[in-house]
Length: 283
Image (cartoon, rainbow, N blue to C red; front, side):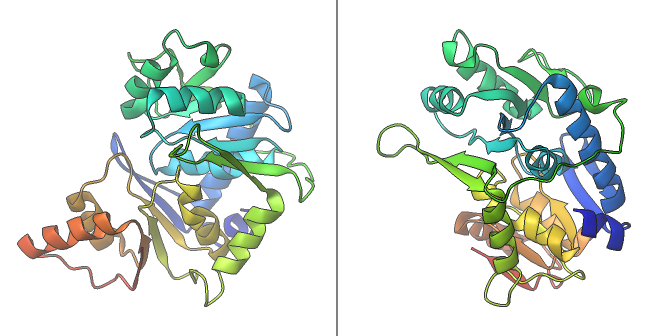
């Protein structure tokens, strides 16, 4: 993050949100992650605590990717497509202290949390500027507002847990997997090689694979290490949304499951698209 903010301060991070396209720079992203870190400190998050996310791919979710692990806490990405009983088990097993949730996913999380003892003591922050009716949550912008854009990031052990996700529970309850600081760093360095998911500072990277699914295959970390431009497709992107972002933002590298690209191919057959900027599609 330090390298990207200092060497590529004007490089863009573009995000499709519930309110349309939002964009800012690595320099502004650096300030926002510091603000979030200070907000988490004020809330009471301490080293080793787990902070959950219940979100699609967008810039606010990306802010948690660096801010939460960098203060010594652990980022726990929760799959919103799981049944309520598995979400309840995961939140309880992980002992999440705070959960960030998207407006469109708030009804799903509220349903899982309703009268569930597993959610006792867990607070919510809704990813946006305003509150939503579905859940009692602080708006994200109010949560970070007024906090300093400077933060004294701690020196952390490479063995410090940094991230966490759970299996889909196909054989009993979901199983949790932790990633240490060293694991995330090593994976990022490996994916930057020609044998990995090579990215350069001239690339425009759009992870369509969900950020709640194995850290979007590590692409947010790799793109940052490369100093590349980020593009996030936001809530429930349709083929039309993906095509527009590729065309308008000049996406060169993207990744997602085969069904995503089959849908895009079908859409392309019926529409006049210019996807010539796209060099690499990872499935």
